[in-house]
Length: 169
Image 1 (cartoon, rainbow, N blue to C red):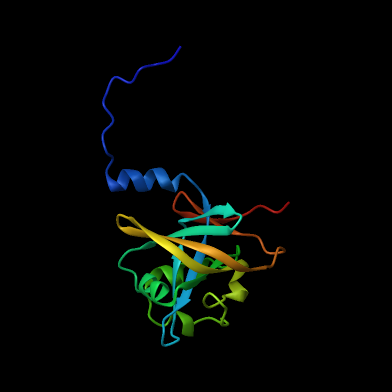
Image 2: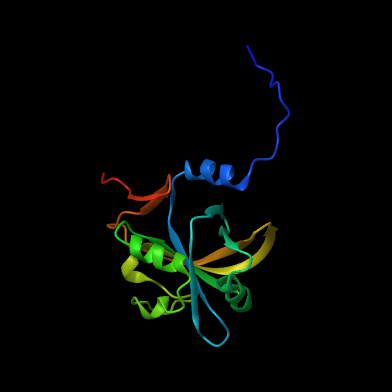
């Protein structure tokens, strides 16, 4: 038997929506790029998903006022650094807004943006193909032009407002 709702759906408050999304565990990434002067930029991002295998494409959702987004749109490229299970401090550093974050950990230049090799289990270099308005965020579509993996490292996860690590096989 199908039940019929007795109330009209109403929009939910942003706090209620955040609570809902905290129930959806996800991997943790740092999206990096560089501006036209070559300065590195980056921010923690959990709003990431695959889009297409042919051509290989993904999308990331970045805060619309973010200086990282501004630099990414300026350069037209970015890297998605998928953090490994021991890189919680890197996730927190790139979520903090601290201006000196690239001075506080090792990184190397990559085709899309800085690679955080010691903090990752995989990296995707991307070229921006388009963007879309997402309210408080901008959806950035990227064609994946290079992949680096370190499969012996387990992914860092985030859900229910806490960090965890993918269980060992």
